[in-house]
Length: 363
Image 1: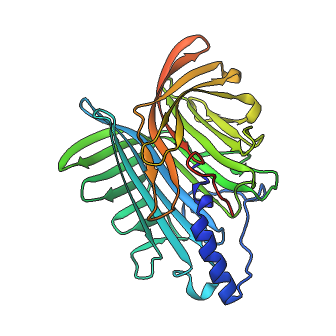
Image 2 (image 1 turned 120 degrees about the horizontal axis):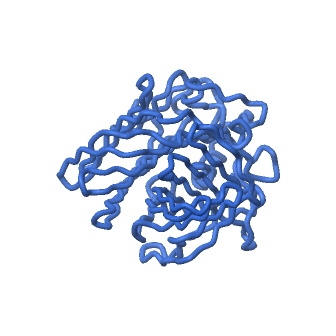
Image 3 (image 1 turned 90 degrees about the horizontal axis):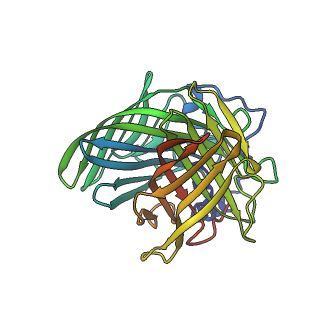
């Protein structure tokens, strides 16, 4: 659901408030609505009339016996709807992480930019978003993502193996009691991925599968949401499962928690909060932030006779993003095992955990 991460950017909200007050701006933003009709490929591009937006990639890659996970995420947030300066009204952020599953090591980096000098942007006419030498864009049927730091880099060509999935109700993903607390949300749940990964000076030719989320909206969460647990799972029978659980400040779960099951043929079915159950089996406490994160779960979806155990490939996959979004969260690769209708099944996944170090603050 990758989601509603940028809605938690408190410092961006405060900055926006200062700019609004100083300039006496009162322009309304657009809100996610069941009346909005997603149209692809047009809606791959940026939507500057919505306050926040993100393009979110995660995946599992292999080079011989070496196994890796990765995350590459681009965020955009609007400060004003003043059309006089369309470039300067945006702030862009990006997170990039490599999980070296074989050696149990985690690497991440972050960026932010106002794009004032052409060093960042997201086109509203076609799909390309970038900050410096980190970028994601369309290449016809394919997508190209790439990012590079001094110690690790990634370049992948992604090819959809299934059509895009419109999350929620035809792409309208409601997340709160107010119908405006929602996003427009679609996913590519299985992307064939080929390319190169460089780690500490060694280049690996890699292949595997990725998952892409794209969301945009203006208001995301009710005030009583403490954080969320988001799961993307690619199962060995070529089905996929997405679940997100919104945790409330009173310790209960929001009735607006939701999910989607994607069949082999690419058709999908929405899951409500009552259609699944998440049970935490194990936790670990971060030495960096002190946050106690769950790292092993049982997921049950009786409607599809699914009983899954999801476990982090290793514990420390936490990001402390003080130079960009200024939140602390866990985003990590997972392994999946279990049964479907009594038959053994396995898979790969990614899990995002927010609100464990500090309550998510939404605007």
